[in-house]
Image (cartoon, rainbow, N blue to C red; front, side, top):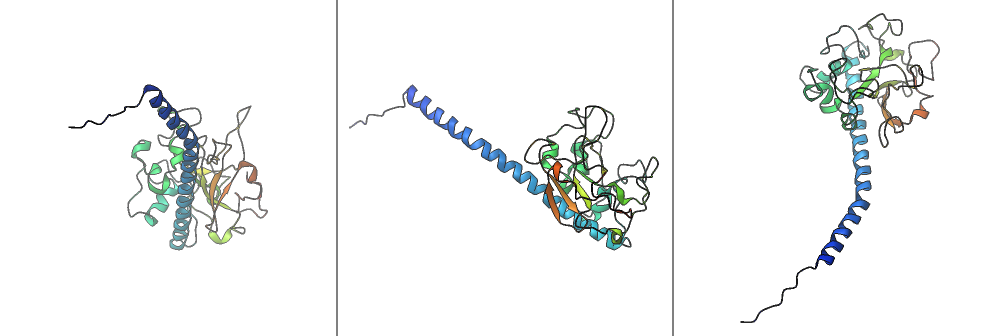
Length: 249
């Protein structure tokens, strides 16, 4: 019987193979991370596009009146635009739940994959027992309520009609929101706050960390755009006033 000599890898050869694999992984990981970030941004744009369409369906069923961003009560199952839009997206009542894991704020089209990995709120990494118990991904223009910005503790459920919007291609409807806000209503486009610390309502978080990345926005004509924080000058927030405020608020 003949025998074949079997040659095994030497330790040096094995280390060389491992080193080559490590180098290839190091080269590929940034590309994979970049692709993942782009996929998350694409998911957000698709979510916003669907919410824009749902908003128009809502106006058709409500005498052209826009959804309200937030207000009317302190019940989280009814005081947000997600509750108003959900019947046009999924035939099931909105359920705020009691945590991000159990909430419709973080399910389906109301969930931004990037938002889930951010702090719960500002410098608070996890819910600490006060404030909103969920991570909220998207916010609507608060100025849809007819009594905003002169509202008291709660904006009105009475909202402006879509026909009032004179610059629909420039007027913000819904946008990615910041973990610095974590609330269904967006008021400010630029930085705001007191002292040295400034905050953003809009989440400029795609591609780079907030606030150096881009934010996705669906406008009142239902088209979706992507902007940096330096590109907000032409976007309208207060669309009900006689003089359009092109710098937001």
